[in-house]
Amino acid sequence: MAHAAMETMTQQHTSKQWKHCIVRRAFVLHGDNLGHRVVRGASFTLLGIALRTVMTIGSVSILARLLLPADFGYLAMASVVTELAMLFGNFGFASVLIQQRVINRLQIDTVFWASALLGFFLTIAVFLLSYVTSWLFHEPMVGQIMRVLCLNFAIEGLIVVHGALISRLMRFYADFWMQFLSMMCRVLVTIVFAWQGYGVWSFVIGTLTGGVFRLVINVLMIPYRPRLRFNLPYLKSTWKTNSSYFAGGLLFYANTNVDLFLIGRMIGATALGYYQNSRSLTDEVRYRISAPLQRVLFPAFSSLQDNTEWLQLAVLRSGRLLAAFIFPMGIGIAATANELVPILYGEKWLAMIPVVKLLGLSTALKGSTAIVTPLFNAANRVALSLRYSIFGSIIVVLSVLAASPWGIEAVAGAIALSALYSLVGYRVGLGLIGLGWSSVWSMLAPPMFASALMWGAIEVARVLLAGHLAGWASLVWYITLGVIVYTLVLVLSSPIFLGDLKAVLIKLRPTVIQST
Image (cartoon, rainbow, N blue to C red):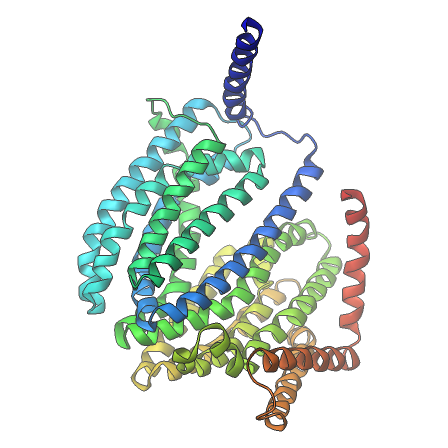
């Protein structure tokens, strides 16, 4: 009996030591076994991206059948304000903790209380702004939603430090499980309440439940407990760094929300619901592929700054491969929208088909030119990139304002047309390393031509098979046909793309062998 009690006490003591140790280990960034940790972390990150994509598309498909387009529109209107507030909530506090090689417990406690206080003030601010937002959109429902969703900012402010510690420890597997489980909780709760007839409030209940669940599992997996102390000089010393993170986030917010604001304000909730779901579907292609690629290419291009010839070769190869994958995906969504929309969303969303087609074209072009961002960053021309992004936002605003009197289809067409501006920034970015318009066309023209023929083949097949195929069978057949036509045309018209793919696979082979 005494032996068992002693063993239990020893286990409890060991558990307490581990809880204290896990926070201490985050004080200093270690390079021990870094390669293995990076490979493992990248694997969990990619797995998380894949699962989130499947869960997002799957949950939206279910919710689209349970809710009305206006419900999605109300949520999109509210998100215009809540996402802006979220920028202030992520005011670089976590990034400062992550990037410093050595931190101490006082700095961690300072960031926790600063984040918690900021989350509290944001909750109050969003609550007050809800009344202005209702007036702005002429929709009382939007304000009611915001007055409940504002609680999420207080929750998020309590787990900023936990997220930073997870990143410093490179415990990406823990982050994967927390993200996956909290998203699963949010999705399931939202679907259950939507099925029970709660309408747009099912989104609100699901979001808050997922936030509380995320708070609980963060506290359980990273046993950090804040102490009652605060170091104001340390917080002041990070202000400049925090501001730079905030400025970049503010521009990204403007680029991704200005169209939602204008459509909701000028056309209404139902039209915004069609547009938001169309944009979400097409952006799954652009952001899920281009965003991770940008993070990889930034340091790669930076390391080649002193060797222009090698940098040009790297940019050309990266640009060709990105265009070869993004163009057929964007065009493929547009080409199969007639089948894709009713299968994923249901018959009441058929008005969304032309919007999906037009935004698919926009995604194909914008996603294929995404390598320009790491190119600007690697050349240390962030200010130049900022100017082009601001001008691009102005073009989108003018396009939406001009097209809104003619409805959501006209707006989607104007936004698709404004995507041509991405070619200007693309050309300027390539010019920084001595490449011109001929390089632009060498990277974009072959996938563009092959994608156009792919779309034509699908249209011909749709006419020939009318009345013979329907539903999933027709969608699978058109996708298969499109892949075959696109691949054959691209390889036969431009064999260099196949050479690029082979070169990448050869370089990946040693990494795969070493990681196993």
